[in-house]
Amino acid sequence: MDNNTSHPSAEYIHNILKKADSNISLATVYRNLNKMAAAGQIRKIFGLENKAHFDYNTSEHYHFICEKCGKVYDLPCDIAPDIVQNTKNKTGFQINSHEIVFHGICLDCKKKERQ
Image (cartoon, rainbow, N blue to C red; front, side, top):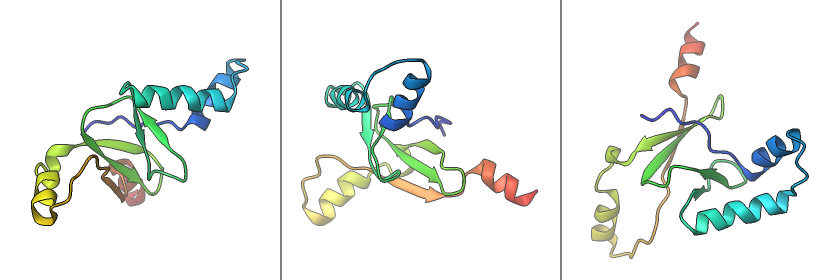
């Protein structure tokens, strides 16, 4: 499992830039992130909160969100290797893209609960 937990929102990036004395607007941050996502340079992901987040990992993978600490983990897609093809076969749907997000408690938070 990849321990990448950085899937920032535009607001998060904007706040970091403001702390660095940048006067870039939130709209500009969104515009540039959306352009990068459209170009395939980053991945725009939904379902993490009420806002989009962005992921530098553009390869096929799933996400796990910890309900305690809010960290987002990348999961390899070989967890369910044939899910897209099986769905196509069983439904006849044309699948253009998909997002799979698991929700639960991460290992770090589970360890803290036991202490």
